[in-house]
Amino acid sequence: MTREKMETVSMKKEAPLGWIYLNRPEKLNVINEKMIDELRQLVEQMEKDNEVRVIIITGNGKAFCAGADISHFKTLNPEGAWLFAKKGRELMDYIENVRKPVIAMINGYALGGGLEIAMACDIRIASDDSQVGLPEITLGIYPGFGGTQRLPRLVGKGKALEMMFTGDRIPSMEAQRIGLIERVVPKEKLEEETRNLAMKIASQSQTSLAEIKLLVNKGTDSSLDAGLNMESLGWSLAFTTEEAKTRIDQFLNKGKNKG
Ligand SMILES: CCCCC/C=C/C(=O)SCCNC(=O)CCNC(=O)[C@H](O)C(C)(C)COP(=O)(O)OP(=O)(O)OC[C@H]1O[C@@H](n2cnc3c(N)ncnc32)[C@H](O)[C@@H]1OP(=O)(O)O
Image (tube, rainbow, N blue to C red; front, side, top):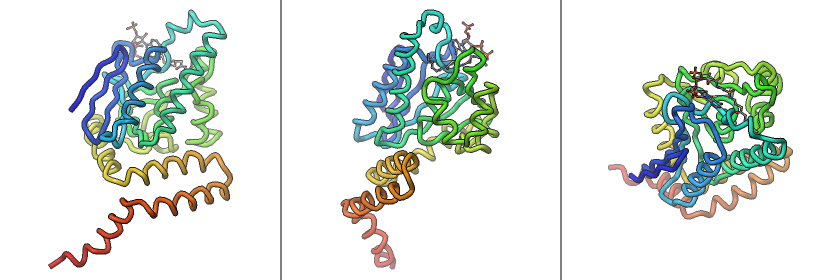
């Protein structure tokens, strides 16, 4: 097991899993520029590491992440705000497109930019005491790290507008009901359930995982016809991989190896 600690994030490599911790627990892991840089660095590092097959992002302490650091807003002029939002947005795009599955393990509040990180991940699993929301409107602003685009794609337009218009926090069970979170588990089982899910995914073909992720992400933003064509092209290539040949042979030969 390898561990690494930076100023605002830390990591634990427990191959085939790579755990990334947002690590400003005394401030509920709020996001500053340093965190954006360091989180990106760790995700890139794990993307390149062949021993890591699934990446998990979570928060240290009692929150996943309470959003962007509001104390930093006072110093922002419009140009600075634009640059900060751009940097954050590029990080979310990077997480969304990294060629490995990324799971958000939500351990408490996931608000504002924190929920935007979770929404850029592929799957969200949360403890039963977690709360999520986009409360930016209560500060006179609105989501700037992709929330106005990713939330409606996950929960539909009406629910997304309701959440962003009110800024209300919703419990994880409600978030699961509307399709924002995939699994809710008892707080004390969060890590175990996340590990089980991640290990199951990690046992699958890496090529297939990467292709499925790409097809779903690009396909949902294309016409059905374009998406189906992408699937057909990709599928025919996947069929020729050594891994597919081996797994298909294993399935076909399993009866022959019995008694
Ligand atoms: C320019 C582009 C921006 C891009 C888009 C992103 C925007 C955003 O994310 S805006 C921020 C959205 N988030 C929020 O509005 C949440 C604000 N926080 C809260 O409402 C509460 O802290 C809470 C409900 C999450 C938790 O309440 P509680 O359990 O009572 O804990 P405390 O309030 O005492 O928090 C502990 C500690 O953390 C500081 N803190 C919490 N959230 C933030 C934040 N977003 N920014 C800065 N600091 C935050 C809080 O001030 C406390 O600090 P101390 O007083 O020094 O202990």
